[in-house]
Image 1: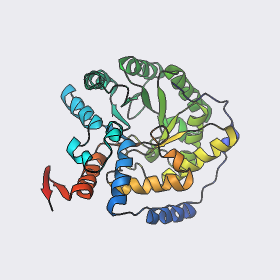
Image 2 (image 1 turned 135 degrees about the vertical axis):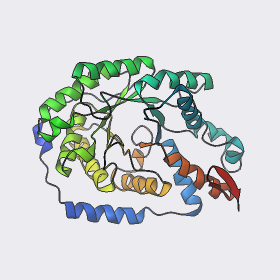
Image 3 (image 1 turned 120 degrees about the vertical axis):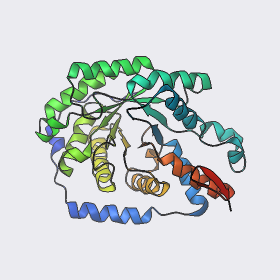
Image 4 (image 1 turned 30 degrees about the vertical axis):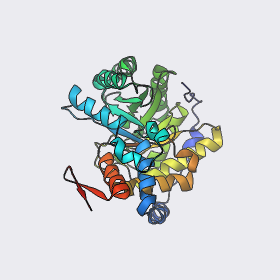
Length: 321
């Protein structure tokens, strides 16, 4: 597995001043451009599907609902729906980018995917390191990463220690994330959750992004989905600026994962438009861009059904028009 390498800590990469007014203006302009309809909306919806980490992170998760999640991730639409508009040779590619579960549920997901014979096609991601707060001892957090990987996870979504960011202990935060990168090794991709709603400022979002990227993150991720503020376009733009500057200075490519609050195809299209117009089309692939979502697939199904067949899903039932 190809993973990003740890680079030396460089405090100069943390030098940033952000104009909130300019940030809001650019974000609003891009949001207005991300509007499509008709078959174009269906195409973008299917693209969003392949970029989605279908997620369940509830206290009452069981083997049964994880199995349902995995079935839906691997086979999001009935074959007859796909046959009407999509080349059968492409059917195998119509699945989510990954499923994301707690470490204790990784084995359930692995068993299901092995039975469905798609374990190699749909990666299992696991949240780790004391999700969602990160308020655990470092040793325990590292052990959780190891447990998730040994259970079958190929992607680890860690939460950073927000206390270190808020007190500007950037080198200490870097050291912690380096430990997590080393624990993942080349066995799993590392996604670092910034929990942007708890970082206090856009400058801290930028700096935390840079620290995680220097420490070898393969992705930087907005949120746990548990904070009061999660993925927003202005925050995404700040993280993209960090990714662009990091690439310019180091040559290392890092992915982006908005999580929390992306529930509709139109919201997903706005994010994809943002990425396309800043980072470029090459970022719109599962290796570099993901949505962390539990409800987005519901809206994707509605858009695809209505666009391809005229059917509309209402309250769990399919109505024909």
